[in-house]
Image (cartoon, rainbow, N blue to C red):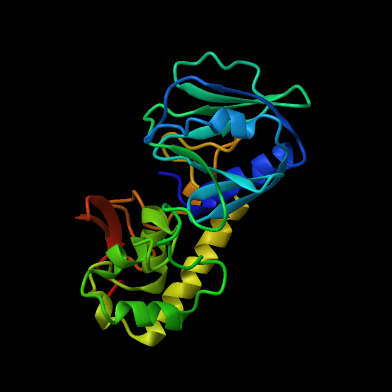
Length: 267
């Protein structure tokens, strides 16, 4: 699933192409994705100008000139393609036609994506979300959340109520850089360790955004460019390889997801 850096990469690409343009046509190829499309989705989009594109957690929020907001989540395999010349693919589910003659296609083989439209400041998919890691999120914020939790720290930082958008890849990498075992109970993590972990999460996410995220399986930017942070992985998907400390990288399953870590340096 695309994580925060990948969604931010998509947001940047869409912003450059979409903002300031009017939506002249919408082609919905099916009744919905993970959830049905709103019945009035086409009507509310056609004729509207895109004024901005924001990101909240792993959601794209596309602002329209009448204060409606188009919400898009890429799910497991969704992607937007810019300036498409062909929209006849089996998994091309949504096509948006813009007033400059270009069209953009939403493709999603697994159909776990979400598309909705709303107005106002509240949406059921957003209201429960925790703080953005690259904004005013501090070690104290994390420490206070962890005091009430007995689950492993890796599970906690994947919880979107604790902090949004980190995801499995970047959780593994941040814990390794922080020298914290992913199996440590959250309420045993000290404030000093939270300071290190929060700092490493911010650094890793920023580094990943700079190189277009991580391309695993389906992800690519809106222009088809692959993300190159995969070449900077220290532990993720490196089971059996040697850690920088000289130990051996191991794999375990937590919450149904693979965790990669080094028991020699992560305590």
